[in-house]
Length: 274
Image (cartoon, rainbow, N blue to C red; front, top):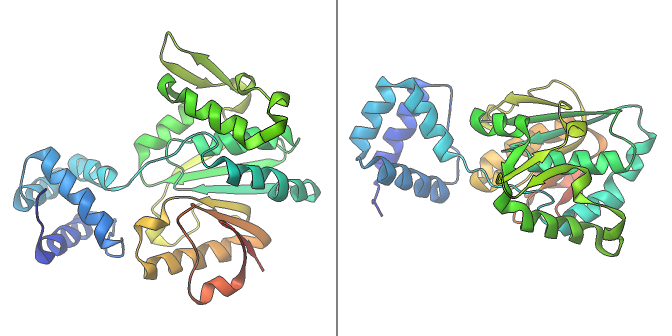
């Protein structure tokens, strides 16, 4: 593993800020360093070589930014959380005239389609407005296409069944996906496509990219890569963007700490705005 000095990391951060609108200053230094070490290894270069190429090639800079950000998601990931969303978070929304949901850091969209499936089943699909954002335009294109590799299907089916538990026989994953082993392809069915508004967005900008209030905000397994100071800034932005009683859903290993935590009621990894 390539060892990096504090000065080398600072030089990288300063160069990124100088050459673009990105700012990684408040990322968790441990995870950020690991990603940067991997980039140097993959590129077979040292920091001086990397900075030189970043400064002279904007497409390369964008690729480095994409490599720094982490994209991990799957359909019905963490089934116990989706079971709670299905049972406790979605049913009260039936009283709403319109439902706004934001998937922040949506990656390749499996989480987005999971939520669309639940909205379909609860009869709330038509009155819902779904928004999804990510810093990485490549993953947004995958999300919009709704096409995934077949090799993931066993885990998806397992998650799907665990979410519904004893009621799993009432639902069929084939109602929502066309599954082709021979073509190594899982394709989202047409009845779920075209519902989502996708937009490139950097959470560190601390802005609400769609300029609406939300009933639910998902931001799972993103904030873990930010330091505590930046996490609290993002939580404050989410708080302001939620309706009172709205739900913020974070990852299994993420939690709200500090003064902003008092503004939410904590229910596992789900936080309800007071």
